[in-house]
Every structure is written in C-alpha cells, then in structure tokens.
Image (cartoon, rainbow, N blue to C red; front, side, top):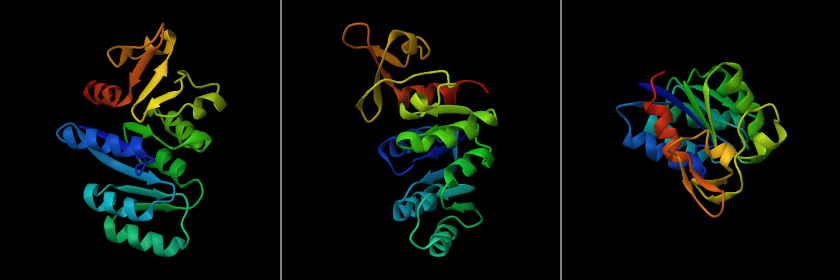
Length: 185
C-alpha cells in the first residue's frame, strides 16, 4: 500500500486527488493533508481520512486551529503557520506527495519532498519556473486536471498524455497519479 500526502488538499487538484484515493483505497492511504487557509474544509477532510499529519499555513487563531484539527484527527501531528506545508512534506514519510499548492508558494514543499527522496506529483508550473533545478516542466493549465505540455514533457508521462493541437499534448494528472500508485515502490 502506498502512502500519499496531499498539499493543497482543499483546492481542485487536492479534491481530485482525494477522489482518486477514494477509488483506490486498497492501494492507497492518505497519510498527510495540508492547505493554505481553508480550516473548515481541512477539518472535514481530516475527519474523513484520519491522516497522521495535518498542516495549515494561515490561521486567524493558530491555537484554536490546532485544537479543531486535533479534534478532527486525534493523534495527528499538526503544523500551523507559515512554512507548515514544507515542514509536513519533509517529515510526513509519505511515499508520494501531490503538490497542488498554487503558485510559487509550493516550491519549498516540493524541495522538501525531493530532498527526502519521495515521489513528487507536481500540479503547478510556477514551482518549476522558479525552481530551475527541477526536472519536468508543465505548460499552461487547460482545466483543473489536465495541462498542455510539449513533446519533451509528454514523453516523460507515457500513457498519461493525450494528443492535442499541433505537437502539444494534454497531461492528465489524475491518470499519472494512478500510474504512480500502481507502480511498485
């Protein structure tokens, strides 16, 4: 069974990732959830998935947020405050980290994931634009779970990219995540 961390769990990429996890419960455990500001939704997800790690980047009342998260997922390691997602990524131990954090804010969590040797399923292009040492580049978003990519990137995701206009392809992130889950560790 593969363990999964979902960063940006309350956004569209995170919600879709959790839908895949629901369908693949025999192969996948949700070990960690992180979000920016959506405390209420994170509490709902925590109650549903009972992850071992939770992170919230921004809270009006950090102590109250911690208490609500503890109540939603008793025993979970809880991080609240700036950098919480990166700290979670660094120590949660999940084999696969889906990073759906919007914009450049996701770079620190991506680097923390890579530094500990976990698989990174990256769902934003800004992290790659500013983190030039990372390997792949995902092009402009077409919809919430597909990204337009060039042939060089499409070749890195066999079976997860469908032809589009010209030499472009549409990369299906949910399909790629499923392929990662099914691949032996």
